[in-house]
Image 1 (cartoon, rainbow, N blue to C red):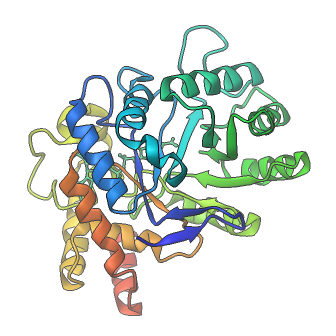
Image 2 (image 1 turned 45 degrees about the horizontal axis):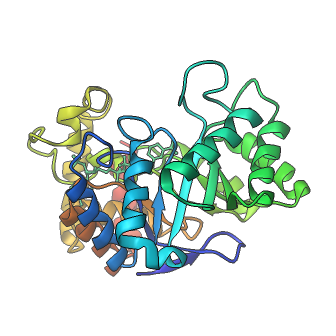
Length: 317
Ligand code: NDP
């Protein structure tokens, strides 16, 4: 495993981290979750990313990971970086989502309880709140660190202006922003044009989510939607991502991946990690073999100028 420094902080993160958004809920087989988490950790993936609402049902991914922490990972707590977030809908009423101090602190406490932990390593504001003053949201993050509930804080889904302001407020409060978690992959490069410069300027870490575009940037959809795949279960993904225009681009990218001796997933991850502002790619998985396949991306992170130009031609077409 390669461990990259997270911005200018003292914390290093593995080049690949495992997210528990999908496949770790109460509806998913627990033994498969256990096998994936254990194998990931054995391979050097020390960072596991959660959020209050991951499941389904919401909260159950934290409960399941808490169970694993107790039964399998307890001796290794100090070797792990565990993150959680609050921002999306979690419980009914006006205090169950967004960015108020009341919601963030209550949700952090509930996450700690589900995980069976006293302290998270990273706690995020999961999304900016257009109605709550940013000072209040950042003040809550500062309090979460000062009260011992988390070691570091981060932000997710904030645009460049919100990022600049959030970092300035946190700096003034004395709890610097550790990391930003944006969506970023070969087929969704909004962050490239609108965020990465600010992240570089702020010298904070960056951990892109959906680095494989939920599985589209693998070779699994090239010949249709296989049974059991995420697109076969999640209509939203099927409707927004799996269409011939994207599949054709993936087919062309896959040719370059093969020339490089990589799987499509490996090239998609290597392509993100070639940028030194990227600390870690936050992958998801439904089986152990996917984690092993993705990890082998680290064997070749170097691209020739010609490869980069051909890739750019395809992804901007
Ligand atoms: P990916 O883009 O890595 O997609 C993961 C999915 O792709 C897997 O579940 C699997 O799907 C398929 N896959 C993964 N590896 C391979 C492989 N090597 N070969 C073939 N198929 C593969 O990430 P996710 O969309 O799962 O998101 C990752 C994490 O990012 C989340 O768990 C969460 O922690 C974070 N996240 C954060 C958000 C935020 O707002 N901050 C929003 C969304 C995610 P299949 O089931 O089809 O096998």
